[in-house]
Image (tube, rainbow, N blue to C red):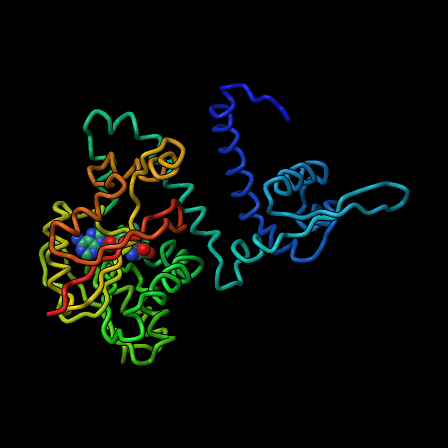
Length: 343
Ligand SMILES: C[S@@+](CC[C@H](N)C(=O)[O-])C[C@H]1O[C@@H](n2cnc3c(N)ncnc32)[C@H](O)[C@@H]1O
């Protein structure tokens, strides 16, 4: 086994950035579509009018990243590789696919890099460079583009897995998808459960995106998109289930918001929060802090592990549970469940 230099973790950082560029290039060239079946670099280079030797080097890197498979073949006395997209790359990085999220990945790359360039400025307390982020139009654009892709590719299945295992789930009739973006989670649940009725509550611009998504899914009789600000407007009442994913970072007073959320539940109703928390160990904290640094520097909050449980307890929720963390884009979230006491 190689003994790595203690600086290897730091050297890995620019290397990861280069791999990100390689993947970005592959997506721009639609390489994973083109490699749905095994192809030799020379053929591919010809089709794309690229240099075959250089393309071969890029393909080898993508192979080392687990995005391509390769098999050696002999032709005209020479040994060469034939490359093919892996199942993972085909599932997530080819466009003609329900689970495609290559564009979302590229959008994340761009925004994290843009943010990275502003860290120094933000440390001076100059919040201006983050002003557009977090605004109504910013969220609506995200809901139309990368959040919609990521919900279809990943979040919907994760949410369905968590919610369908709740003991209350078979009896849920009314749900609220609080800060639900384009509403993918409510849409997925309503599609599978014709008895379910629900509301996607969002900032007005994003509620319009959810409204359109609900109409496109043919679920207007089951679901409604409601526009408002969850920190100041009424959320409605009588919900059996509230799903709230990655939203509480943006509220100024989490206790106040939790009290309003609890009041929106029916007695006996259940709140499920999927929300990043900062783990206590450095290794686990690294991924969460890397992703959420932009949010933290713009004055939003990411709670230390366990604090959401305490906040739920302090605001009258009962039977609180904390599940294992689950993987959603781009960093894992903790799942915290609390209930309103039956009357
Ligand atoms: C990170 S996104 C999460 C979207 C969705 N829950 C998901 O997991 O895919 C946060 C969402 O919270 C919404 N949001 C933020 N502040 C809000 C507020 N004050 N009132 C209503 N929605 C809000 C944003 O519009 C955005 O869609």
